[in-house]
Length: 171
Image (cartoon, rainbow, N blue to C red):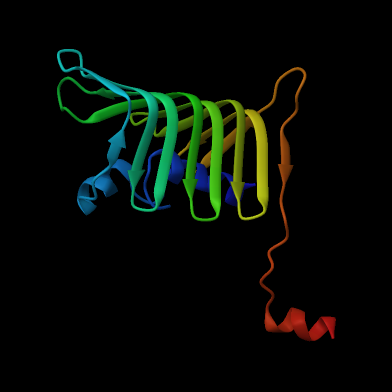
């Protein structure tokens, strides 16, 4: 299950799957831009809130995020991004990986990514479906939560790579 959930974070914050470091810090070091397009932008610099509305598409490297609305919160003191909230038809893609939810939240202070409502994550063939999936970046710790009426549903395929010993034993 760990392998299945790990890629959620890389998608959500639009970085490559590098979990050893803070992904936002890695992005700053790499100086790789994030390109965001939307039908509308409301920039409230006095409160540090940037709202992208309508057909939001955010791209960085090989990752793409789609949503109906994305709020980017900046810390008033440092000017750094402190929280990102995506709402409505949230889809995050990378080659051979996809995550979907009704809402996605990334909280930098807590190093936490939360996918809420019809959360679905697929990496290769492996799939996890849940009402909510929470991943703590710094602890590499994930929790998938179902509802009263719907349980967590995980499908994990065996690793297709075999060692030479396994191959010999099967003959």
